[in-house]
Amino acid sequence: MRKIKDKLILGLVVGLLADIPKNLLCLTLFNADITTRKCSDLAASVFIPTYKVFSKKGTIFGLLCDFVVGSLNGIAAVYLITSTGKVNKKNALIKGLLSGIVSFGLFRGLFIKVGTSKFPKAYPSDILTNVTMSISSSIWGVTAGLLTLLLGHKDLFEPKPHIPSNSLDKTPSSSTLS
Image 1 (cartoon, rainbow, N blue to C red):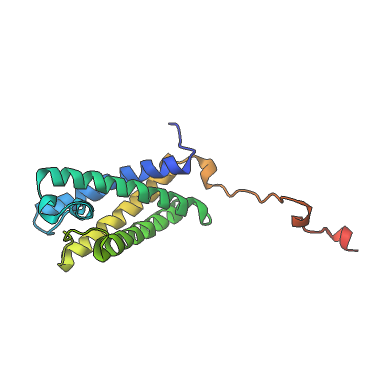
Image 2: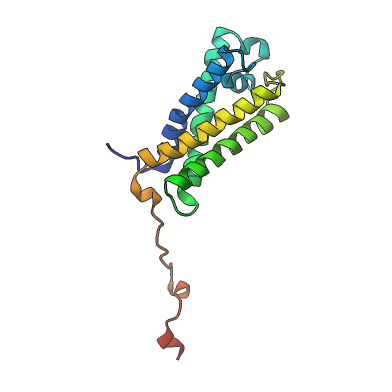
């Protein structure tokens, strides 16, 4: 299987694929009447009025919005995983988990709660729905971490050696100090 060498493309793919289990979990919990909202409802409510969010077209629009947000979050997750220290399976899963929690908090807190939209929001007010949405975002993050390892080229995970740009960046050797 060909591995993806570009971090941006890898992030888009990883984010999109990681959004599938997240949305399946949200939809399953919603259909079982455990939660009062789906993840796609939140994404759609940024752009359209609440009464349109719950229509068939609003649901489709919400899913598209959620997958776009997931893809963009995937870019951030890949950069976090590949640019912050050693990369192995354990670290990638932990960094992915962190990325999922942070992206949920930013999206939920900044865009939804603070209000980038003039429309009333479809965000849930009950604790159980909020907790399950944060859990589903955590699942997104762990999945993104795992997919980064599976789909990313090994060169993305190896530290790059520092190459001095000029002679002033070079450290003096012991022979030149004497």
